[in-house]
Image (tube, rainbow, N blue to C red; front, side, top):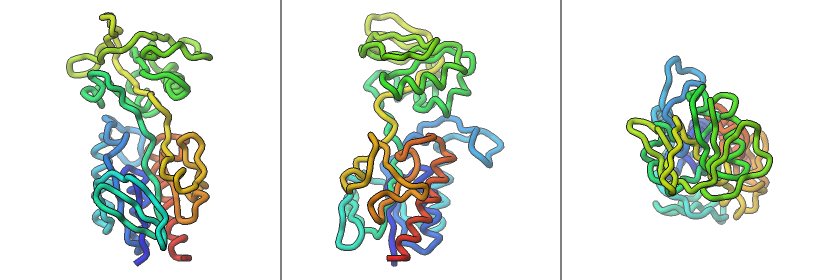
Length: 286
């Protein structure tokens, strides 16, 4: 039976799986975790839900749907993707899988700094996506942890909404071309603190900054390690793919946050559907 392996179990990967398994392809989804969606506390901008739904709740529904249709879901870490005699060989901590086509849907890596309170307050004041959660901080004080273009872009999204936005560089120098109204503090951050939710950021010198939310913006929004090793075109960590998710490598497709653009569930689901359909056509022609 023709087969497709999908790396990533978020909305893009599961959406692709729904299409490929219904088309009669043996479909395996290998995922390490739920990615950014698993860390999202509230979603109210995704079509079809009258009430707010949590990220983990939406993820569970997607997994249940893929399983019901016949997809195989395996939780494991992918360690490498190589060319095989026919198709690809995907090395994982659960063994080696072979497939006629591979869809990369690994999301965009959100680096988590080793700061006390970051993981404890995820979903309770710590966020990884300004465009997703800025709405919940209208008229409130927020901070952005990070430096570079990614952090500046997150701050730009928050500035029109929040009462104040402070960029915390953790010791890095003040970036150039700061947006108007953005405050900057270069001191080292020791901890994020609060009771039931975030209340303040504490610096290494003992001072504290009262905030209602902290947005983590370290690193870059994209990951193309597997694509780069296979010879696909990568811009930074963003995999270069066509509208149908096809990369420059025949049989290799990409969908969702790993291709850049709007980091939203709606786009990820659409990308997954396009990549799934393109993978179906590729396998059938082969």
